[in-house]
Length: 512
Ligand code: HEM
Image (cartoon, rainbow, N blue to C red; front, side, top):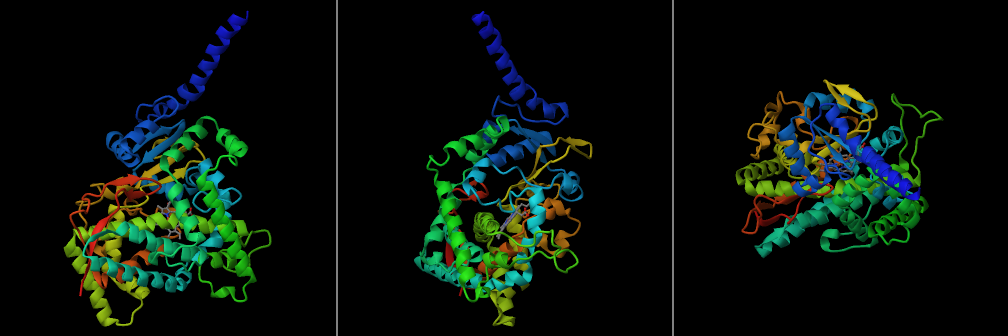
């Protein structure tokens, strides 16, 4: 009897597992006529993605399957869409059905502990409340108040480039721009005055550097596989044993959070907190203004809690560090490899300062048109964020394609930026394509380094201001040159952003 029970029970359980974790979930795309690579049990397409590289596998997928194809991470569904008309619907017209990004990996939830998510992973309902309170902190007027902080770091950057040029050797500018960005992002988020470029550090710089170094894409993929099969299992495991496992990322997050609380406390006790010109202070002072002006009604949340403020500042730091550091490094690399374009830019900067001798870096970076085109073209060729996601909250049919509820749409940014359908000679560095004539007739969705629609990058203006000011400060006196140890082409890797694995080695040469 017992033997019969075992013989029936075990196969039934195995059959059920096979049915629930393999047969049913992996049928969804094929039933809807959506192509996808062959799946492996349990992991779905993850092994193929890790073997080929995240970006490469996506580009191969688009080439082989066309502008709509699917893949599975564990049993969760991902749909890669590069059809611009479908994307326009998803980003704009059907925002209510695609209101947020991919679900936040539980590991990140665990790291941040009591702190609520920042805007990046914020769920739609909460985002609609918080975004109007946060948005005014990113207005041109508020950002302009932060320019002294960036000017100070630009001066240190210029001094650092001067030291490098004197060695007459090539140097890893990725490292230098990393220090510059760390200095500015910590200054902008928390008002830090530490001179990272001069080798100084403090507890904030250390905690931030460690948090930023800890996040690994394959860990996140495994997190997603487990959560897709056994929702709640990772949550249960980490809530029971998390505190006993000494996980470095958790420790560094906690340090950052405590520093954030301490800063808020000090600001509250300070006699004149208004002298602080950073996001922490702006968020402490922030009040939402209802559309059309006037005071917010009583039943609408109009200010942020301390936890929300700290969460948002850490979010800005995470979102702004690697993206900005990578962009500056890529643009320097492109300029070094395209000296005639670099000459045009340097001449534009010289001419501007001949006419406006005492102009601030902010004004120069705002007014020099060619600089804007160079930065835009740099972001086209090397977008640091190579994929944008939108989570489908309600089954939708768009242009004949059925997108089932709980599918995550991925937009292959880099693929769009190189598509010959939209770009002439996409492999060439041609800043003029961003001139008014160059832009004419181009579909807005084939260029999305900062995303698109209501959930596009809130830090875009800040990032562009910082990148342009830094480039102006450097190129007034120096230029970039390739040397024997410049890696051409750059070897790139997909982490949270796309980054140059071996850094960017260039010579920095004095211009005059
Ligand atoms: C070159 C630098 C940067 C690039 C390329 C970049 C790119 C992006 C992209 C592609 C997104 C997703 C947009 C979408 O889903 O449509 C995003 C979102 C976001 N970025 Fe940036 N970013 C940069 C710098 C920054 C900086 C400096 C900050 C903060 C100061 C920042 C804060 C954010 C936040 C908070 C979000 C989420 C917005 C929301 O959901 O409402 N970013 N960024």
